[in-house]
Image 1 (cartoon, one colour):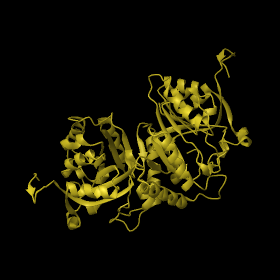
Image 2 (tube, chains in turn cyan, brown; image 1 turned 180 degrees about the vertical axis):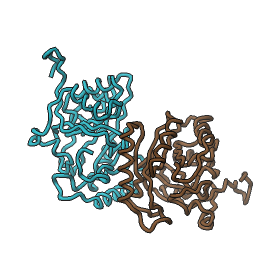
Image 3 (cartoon, chains in turn red, purple; image 1 turned 45 degrees about the vertical axis):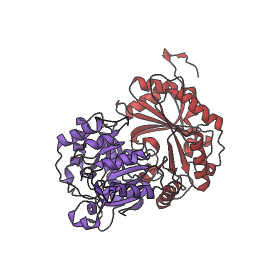
Image 4 (tube, chains in turn brown, purple; image 1 turned 90 degrees about the vertical axis):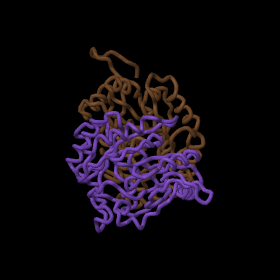
Amino acid sequence: MTQTIENNRVRTKTIQVSEIFGPTIQGEGALIGKPTVFVRTGGCDYRCAWCDSLYAVLPEHKAEWASMDTRQVFAEIQRLSNNTPILVTLSGGNPAIQPLEELIDLGHQHGYTFAIETQGSVAQPWFSSLDYLTLSPKPPSSKQVTRWERLDRSILYATTNKYDREIQICLKIVIFNEEDYAYARSVAERYPALPMYLQAGNHTPPQQAQEIDISGILDRMDWLIQRTIADRWYEATVLPQLHTLLWGNKRGV
Amino acid sequence: MTQTIENNRVRTKTIQVSEIFGPTIQGEGALIGKPTVFVRTGGCDYRCAWCDSLYAVLPEHKAEWASMDTRQVFAEIQRLSNNTPILVTLSGGNPAIQPLEELIDLGHQHGYTFAIETQGSVAQPWFSSLDYLTLSPKPPSSKQVTRWERLDRSILYATTNKYDREIQICLKIVIFNEEDYAYARSVAERYPALPMYLQAGNHTPPQQAQEIDISGILDRMDWLIQRTIADRWYEATVLPQLHTLLWGNKRGV
């Protein structure tokens, strides 16, 4: 949406928002343990078999999402963070299908930093404005197909046309089985310069399971550690989802 | 011990070793999730009330420790890592009371990297040879007294007389209660440039408790997250001990 004048106010871009919550800690990946406010956008071009946030993905949940403009989203971030600059994590759904550049620029003006979590299926030139880009291409167990040229372009956009700001890029792969592990290996071979985070999957995601199976998740984590080490893949980092261990499938934490 | 010629071999420094194990993942702090081999040295100048590795601290366990020279220690690291360079974590006890400079230099020649975990009560000029220095001054609940000038000197040594190698320094504080939290705040004020990791303590350490209380540890972690966020201390990173969640009080993992 282009800027238009309406009631003497500059109308800013409209973002589909599933939820804005926090501050809490980032539970996974390179920024694990960092206090952050999450902006979870609505809508996704993927339908991962084990998706843990279908409420932000499926069109039948659209009525639960809010259409908010940049200023409204940032006002809510400021309210939640008590007007103190914090890391903002843009998640989804796939946040890359939303017009988030204005939000990032506005936040930067107030000292906030921005991380995005996206599968890399939609590359945006504004990735270069981010502070952290986590690309999480989806392994075979997701039943999705990786379009490599789009992942390439996501990295290209993130590393070109930059301002004075440094961007940190990393890869994160959720792993459920041996096939997923082999996929992660191949991704690492394609992008040897990027730090790789391996994440034990939750096979009991909300909306798809009666109860979360923490012990099963820990077993899978244990397997993933042993698998990675047996392979002498010492450059990888193996992490669980802390929020799942702490709070199970609860939302908004 | 100085170098002496014995049986036509150069005798290298003698290190008191409690255990060498791995590869496993680092369970805590800045390098959480990274594959590593642990060298746990024997002996400590502290007696923390909640120490989780008394077997590497108390003199009555000395008979279980091995006196190994640098080459023996490195040979064991190479064997465990399958001769593939990996991160080596020097832990204890207090590893800073051991002559580890030769080991670090030898490992570097073979592509290995080195992290140390120490309370900063004994500052060593060879800290400058490290790749990662984690200083974990002990809060009031430990019943130990922090000698600040030694902590200052540890940082000074780590950042001076460096070779071409970059060193990453961070602080890590184990927190059990409000007093410990206030201590962590004061440490952060003293060293504002250093990344701070807050760690939920294990109040049921081995040798002091019948059984590990995972649910109590997770409750304390939850409290620590809320406490940090309520304080708007957004620069801190809050992490649990992953190895405790995964494997309880088991040793050698």
